[in-house]
Length: 349
Image 1 (spheres, helix red, strand yellow):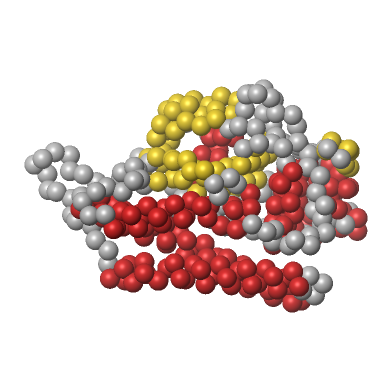
Image 2 (cartoon, rainbow, N blue to C red; image 1 turned 45 degrees about the horizontal axis):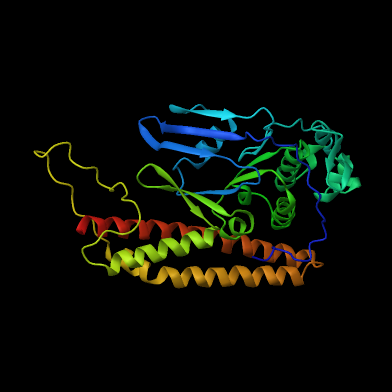
């Protein structure tokens, strides 16, 4: 996929610590939220240069899994192991507390004065400039920054610490389009491992080449390729399941929406079926997604053309944010409806 802004003026040099042969391993981990199981018996070894996307509906455990990778949470069962050279940078959904009177450059220097890159040394001042904090802004107190600028500053400090495993939790939620463009360019040359939680199809297609999908049976399954490839695969499997009478779909069976009866004397689960509104939505949602994708692409091209017109750029950015939110919601509904259809087909077979 093309970058959000092919003419981005920010040339990136990435800072990363050397990552040894042993990275992070999760061995047969399970985790629940209270009495609600999130995932069971999951094992994974992060490889050097990993580009991994975590996807699934809200509340399924994506952030929890990131925290397990980071060592901030312990699994209910199983174990986590990490190599001694692993250095994690974790862009969480909530920024760390910042002294409102500290200046931008002072905050960044708390991470490092200088970082080493393939292009040589970069000072904190140079890194600030590459992340759109010009010299005049570097001596500004943090309290005078906007919310978006503070999030960009938080991201920059993480990158300035030269991690070799970078965890990003919903970075597209509150980073502006320009910052995302810079981040995408940065990650292209980043030699370490990157694990991303996001609903943004465009960002995932740009950044990851493997998907871990949280599925309704408390299992996390691996798919090679980007998010668009995953959606195409799921769509093809759903169509095959609906066209094949009396045979199970190729996806591993998933947990039914109604739990099975504990014994033969208990009432049988109710038969699931699509509501009329869901049938109509399923028939039209592909066209809706295609329309929203076309709208987002058009807005990105218009933003590129208006790169020097700040007022128009701001207006187009607001339109793109709204269109992207609508696209994210439509794709979440697409996944839900197709998984529901699969379960109905399984119940019939």
